[in-house]
Length: 128
Image 1 (cartoon, rainbow, N blue to C red):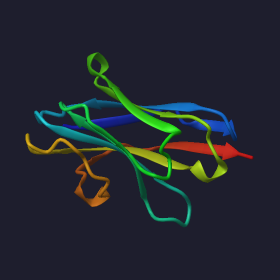
Image 2: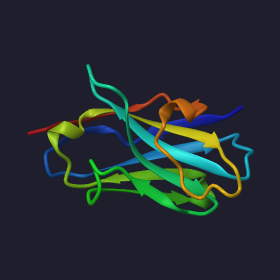
Image 3: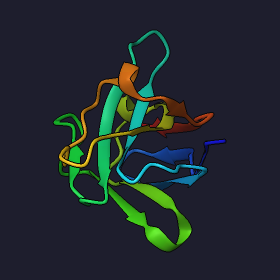
Image 4: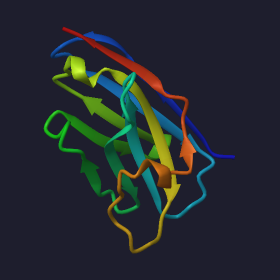
């Protein structure tokens, strides 16, 4: 049974930082895409960043490029989203997602519908 558990959300002032964690268990695929998505009230879900295992290739959406980074800790089966220089428009529910992929796929997309497994989400609120 696949489980994704997010943590690290909270309330910060604009310009602050947060690090979100996604602890994964039960993923038996040899090649996996891990993604972070966010959804603000009244808005569509937006892909933020992806991490390809085992290629370690990452993708950051243009909307957060230069401020957010994605990384992983193999030993802890955890993927992180480091968010710096946060803005009020970053306020959203952030969710971690995962899908199996093929060995020759080294880059992961941000098509939410393709991700099979989702965490419960963690709220990020940025005040001005």
